[in-house]
Image 1 (cartoon, rainbow, N blue to C red):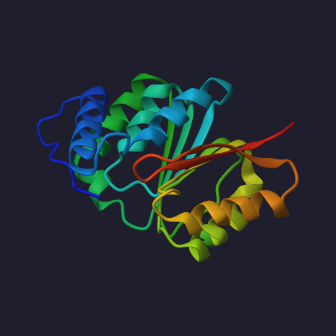
Image 2 (image 1 turned 45 degrees about the horizontal axis):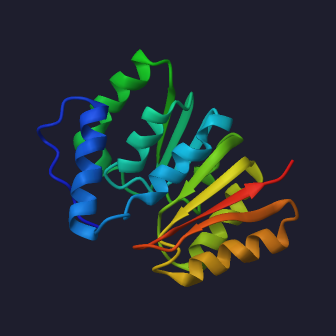
Length: 189
């Protein structure tokens, strides 16, 4: 993934529009389809956890979508801190969003947080790591799990299918098969 040039942006809205444009310019149309999936299902959700933040494109999307609690987890928050952090802190304060940032491995005990309605997985793109993340965080997700890169890395989608098989009530709701793709899991009531 590219590191977008974002030194000129002044708001979360500008940040989001610019990073999405730069990512899709570099990686192709539909690279950010997981953002649209998050927005599609967010109306039923108030709380969000993100495993793998990088510069924060999907995090900015979540902020603009209307979640009231956002938790960002990444082993390094250096790229997030460079451009989005000051904009995000102000935006979240102004919009009464609780923002938690954890600079830890998403597969470590330190990454565990409260129950959330939706979780995004876009961290280390290896099935063994995603399995660990699902084992650690899956029980705390109430409605949706969205994962990026599941078409480009098919073993990630397989890992999600296995999670559903081993956790009754979870099912694959949607799978994007353009560009790098994404998968949405839903927990039935």
